[in-house]
Every structure is written in structure tokens, then in C-alpha cells.
Amino acid sequence: MTAPKLDDIDVRILATLQREGRITKAALAEQVHLSPTPCWARLKRLEKAGLICGYHGDIRLERLAAFTVVLVEVTLKQHRFQDFERFETAMQKTPEVVECLATGGGIDYLLKVVVPDIDAYQRLIDSLLVAEVGIDRYFTYVVTRSIKDSPQAPVDLVAKGRKPGTERSG
Image 1 (cartoon, helix red, strand yellow):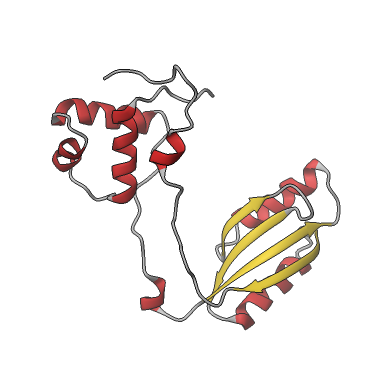
Image 2: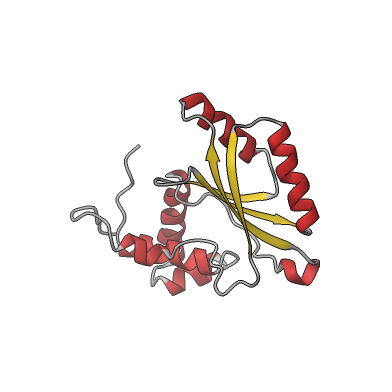
């Protein structure tokens, strides 16, 4: 699938939605300097193109309950297609794993795990080992505090890397 052609207004719409997911259509149009009808049409086009995959609340978990964040390096026993597929399917089904990144280099995956406490983390790892999802080795890093936690990369900075000629006028 080829990336849709975006102009600066499209990027401003995406960046604004990323910062302010609950913004009204009228306020969005005002912020990106469009009238409401063309802004709404662009928004629908961006949604249809799959660039906007949802609107979410940013929940302050620390105000809800105590929890522990653990980063885990994982190396698989074998490196066949079905081994990667089995592990990735298991991670998709594991709610405590909030992020799973496939990596190149010395490890296969980096996981971000959110659990109530270290005991819950160890029970999770034990269950994954028993389930035989292909883990050979894992290394655990307990997060002691978060310095910066941005849910997504800034769309306006990423969009600056667009290839020349992909801009389109209003």
C-alpha cells in the first residue's frame, strides 16, 4: 500500500488531532486555517486512508493504582518464520505487554510490560515460558521512573521526511 499524498494542511490536521484528540470539528478547522466543510472532508479522507486509527484517552495510571513498568529483552530459541509468528501472536494476546518491538542486532524483541508488581511480572514470564512461545533468553529491566513518555512520534516532524513531490495542494 502506498502512502497517501499529504500537504502541509493534512499534516497540521494530523498533528493537531494527535495533541488534542477531543477537539471539535470547528476548532480543528480554525487551528488549521480552513473552513469547517473542507476540513471535515480532509479529516474523512485521512481516516479512510488509514492514517487515523482511533481516538484515545491518555489515562494517568499512577493516579489509578500502583504499577510497575518492566522492559524485557527477548531472544528466541529458533529463528524460523513460524517461531516469530508464534511469539508475536502470543504477545498480541498478552494484555500486560503494551509494546512489542522486533529488533535487529543482538536481541529479537524488546517488550514494554505493565503489571501491578514484580511478582505479577514473574508470574507472567513463568506462564510465557510454560506456554513455550519460543523464548530462549530474556533480560529484565525494571523502570524506576519515567523521564519522558510520548505515546506517539510527533507527526509533524516525521512528515518532514516526506519524499519530494508527495505534497498536494488543498
